[in-house]
Length: 196
Image (cartoon, rainbow, N blue to C red):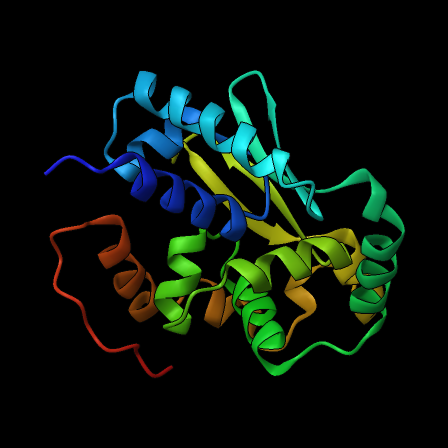
């Protein structure tokens, strides 16, 4: 059954809200199962309607990428919030995600969520804002992966990741490798997280 125009707009809004970075229009089309031409026109219609609200956020399009951004008039409040987020203590979920990225990185968002068992989009965005992790495209996997940043090492006073407790054992743990293989193999059955 074909997605209606209002439902398509709602789904585009949800994706833009969840994304911590610009999304390629081709990727949005793929996620939603909609033709690229229809996705382009739906995004443009959504952008026009959303921006006409004159709210605190705007939909920006640059080339083949789209992102939900803070309106220029709200830059000061957005900056104050971002600074407060960066200065505040890390939450337990943020620490858990950071630990997984430190020991298992480079790691995809799907792999991180598979290990933690919860959606991690907002956590990843906060860790990126703090500069504790970095995002890059993995040429071999053809998807984005997350790794620890130099700021993370500086913050903990570590010379490298190998200085983390039991790094070698956990970074290359066979049971975790097998568990993560279920993310990379869509037909694999879902299993409980391994105990290590």
